Every structure is written in structure tokens, then in C-alpha cells.
Image 1 (cartoon, rainbow, N blue to C red):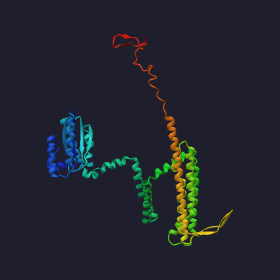
Image 2 (cartoon, rainbow, N blue to C red):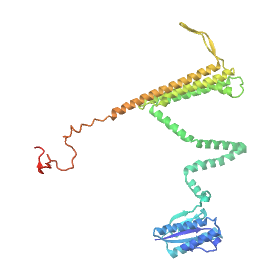
Image 3 (tube, helix red, strand yellow):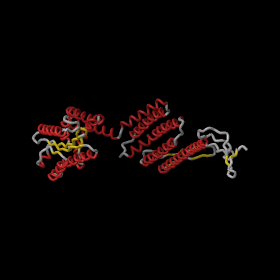
Length: 427
């Protein structure tokens, strides 16, 4: 089996730099050509292509194949004359050496156009593309573009938005003006990039899948989530109403504090409702309740108290909210006179109560976690117990059920070492 390892050079760089005419055939001739081309232009990628040709030929020789090494160049006048020159030289090589197959070595997209010419003359088993590492990004752009255009998902993601932009921009520029059209296009592109960058499409698909699964499985959290969404809207509306009731406050701190002061109770109720529904789902299911769901309601209450306390402190210091007063009451023998709590005392009270509630939540979660661990340990002890091993001495006379497959005998004779005679163990 004869294999033709041919290096293609469409623009005749080899002949222009060395003065040699192609085809150049033979191992030693191509090896000398490497030196001539390297001395003429050390930066030429054709040197690497020639060396790759020699390497491929050497590998095939190591596999005991008959190899013919050749370098074929085109013409510098025009692309048509170059292709015809290459076709003529390939015909001469095929007629002289009659190869069964060929391995084509190229170093650029320009040389790759000659591959069909070789394929029409001889069977091509492989096309070896040589890409120089120093120029890998530049030389491989052509192949990357081919792969990009072959990928349907990439085409839809990149080419479709660019095409829509090029079509819509002239229309917007005609009706709204160039500046407004460019602003609208860049805004849409920015939203699209953020949409893809944050994987919002995956998040929406995941949420839709969870909602569908929750609806089909009849979970309580579906109802509580809807109620929580309604309470969230009420809280936002209450916060906006609170901010609108202010009389032209300076800056943004006071409106932000007023919004938090009015919205936090409703937002806290929304979070508690959602967590309660999730907690009920965990309680209904067969699996044990996770400690995170037990601790979540306490954390929500603690955080809402802290935010409420700080917002009230700032509003009271600015005179927007009045100081909190404890009314007088009388309960049996216990009575109390009315007194006012300052802003600092009120903030400290909220913070202390929030810390206490968070500690209680941690304690409750740890208690249920410890109970669950004890139950799991008891279950493991109950299911992992083993039957006590019978006494070997007491069961020494019990015959074994394991046999070697041979015939069973009632008894086997024993030999007395003193008398060298066989005795029946039953005697």
C-alpha cells in the first residue's frame, strides 16, 4: 500500500523564495527544501508545513507503509492558473507512483481550496491543518467561523439579534431620529445581554417547573406563596403611601426610612406566610423537617424588628414620628403610670427582643435536630442488631451442611497412631 503525503502551496511561496520548481519529491529533497525555505524566510509558516509533512511520512513509515513525500505548488499569476498547475502536478504524481491514498498537509485556508482537486485524483484519507502557535488565533479564525455557522444555537443567539438590529435601526432612525433609534437599540441589546448573562431564561424555566410540580402535587406552599405575594404588594403600597405623606423631606434617607417603617410589617407577614407554607409541606411529607425551615420564621421576625427599630429611631430623631409612650394601666394590685420611651431606648428594646427571638429560634431548631438524630440512632440500633453467634463448643457436634459434592458417609474411620490400626469411632 502506497500513501502519498503531499504538502500543498497554492501561492507558490516555496518556488518564489527558493527558486525551485515543483513538484519536489522524495524525503531528502523535501528535507533540503526545509532548510532552504527556513534560511530564505524564517518567519514563514511554510517551514512548519514542510516539517509536518516529513513527520507524517515518518510515522507512516514506522507503521511499515510505503510512503511518497512530495511538495506541490501553484502559480503566482492567477488562482485559476494556480489550481490548474496543482492539478497537473497531482496527475503526474499519480501516474508515476500510483498511490492508493493520500494525506494532504496545508497551513492556511487558501491552501484548503486545493483539497477537492486532490480528492478528484486520489482517495484522501486525512487533511492535516498546521496552525502555528504564535498565530493560532489568526490562522484558526476561518475554522472557528465554520464551526460557528454550523452550530444552530449559536446562530440564533448571535446572528438573529444582529440581523434584527440592522433591520430595526433604519426604521427607528427614520421615525424617531438617529439618536433615539440608537438609544432604543442599545437599550434592547443591553437587556438581552443581561438576560443571557444572568441566565434569567434558566431561572424562569426552573421556577415554572417548580410551580407546575407544586400544583400537580397539591402542596400547601402554593397557596401561601400567593398570599405572600399579595402581602408583599400591600407592603410596597403602604411604603409608597407613607413616603407620599411626607412634606417635601430633604435627601433620600428620611423617605427610605419612612418606606421601611411602613412596609416592613407587611413584608414580614409575607415572609412568615411563605415560610409557614413551606414548613407545612415539610411536616406533611415523610421526610424529617430540616432545621433551616424551623429557624427561618424566627430569623424573619428578628430582622423585621431590627429594621423597624432603626427606621423608627431615625424618624423619631427627625421629628417625623412621635416618641412611643406606655399608657397607664391598672391590673389588680399592679398599676403603672404613663411614661415615654426615648428613641435610643426604643431601638435598644427592639434589638434585644430581636436577639432573644433569634436565640429562641436557634434553640428550637437544635432541639428538633437533636430529637431527629436520637430517633435515627434508635432506628439504626433496632435495625442493625444481629443475632448472637451460637456457642461453638456446644454446637461442635452439629454436622456441617457444606460438602465437597462427594457421596455422604455415615462415619469415617480413624487411625490410632500407637497401634497403626483403623478403629470405628462408634466403638
